[in-house]
Image 1 (tube, one colour):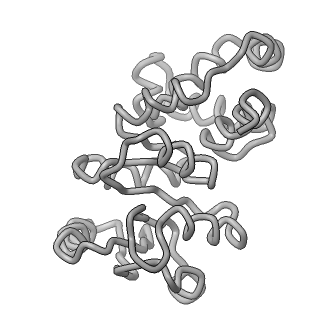
Image 2 (cartoon, rainbow, N blue to C red):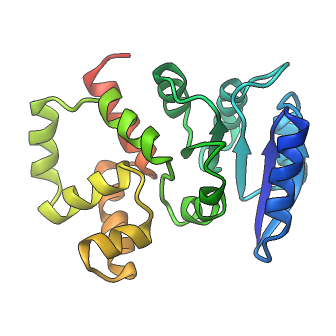
Length: 211
């Protein structure tokens, strides 16, 4: 069972999302909260596997809550679920340690995203993935360094992962087995000394943009 906490201030949407999650036989909704004021207490009490976090909430917004989570739970997957697809929110969420970024209108992606993020993926709505690639340009020197570090197959796979492809989608795109994808991902993370695709993006950003 995937234990999930949902943070959403809109009551109607929170109820709809709760119903969606509760209908899944392999997902347990352990809490549905209107804001993230008690986020660390909630996590300690509910012990979730994944957090679904709205950005625009009263009292404590989603990005501030994400920063609090990362101070104590570096590896807990947190997927931002929002109506915002502007550059500032995307950049701030990823730099704060978001594991994924989905638009609320993408209801069909929520369940696959919960499973994908636990497998090490970085689920993103397609339009968001495109923005991410423009937000974090990679200069020639970084490209050269990565080419020395990663094999051509690993570079190809990493780019698909950063674009928001799930492991299954990568396997289909590259015509390789799912276990082969997992093996490549582990090697990439080990070489880059990161634990997720968003960490890889953040690492590249710190060394290239100085933001």
